[in-house]
Length: 113
Length: 114
Image (cartoon, rainbow over all chains, first blue to last red; front, top):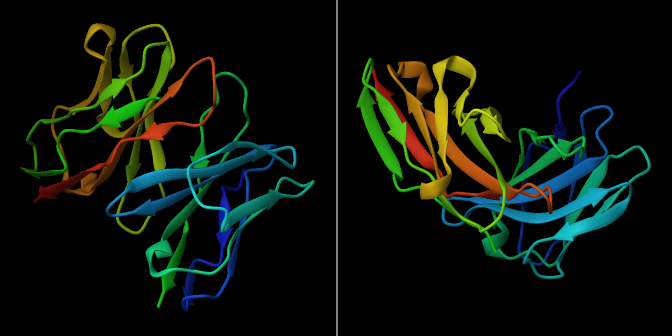
């Protein structure tokens, strides 16, 4: 099976702009989670989508939002970008059975200038 | 709320040295435990996981971890490291009966000198 894919891999934006990141999960996986990874904070959970519904949410401001489509592909949107949003954004998919694990994509490196 | 603590932020070893990376978690219930590895320029990969059963878990590339419930620990070990083990290692925990979302530690950067 193909792994989790994320596009784009690199992105440069300026403060105040908005950005949309995309994630395609492993075929058959219905859960998609998003994480923000920074050197200072490590891996922080943003939100999880399952069957087009947000099932879990981390402690991030409302500028961070997401959605999931019927084919399980997910997008994450960040509005009114701030310098502190510069990070590696990781997407992970899982099958959500009781013993499943998450499989991570390569990430999108977002730089906010 | 659960939390994960990785005591060693940076570890530098020579090839063939033994490795042990510490991981402690705080959570009162039953947990699932994971170690992930992120090689330079690559994505996060699962190294090993513990769900139940034998507390000594073997993973890929010769890594193993031992779950000690009384100590809330899940330390990662490898008897003899190689230069190719240079990477960032993350411990993660999640409650087995609740959210599927794991909480990650801050990571340990391992550098192995040839």
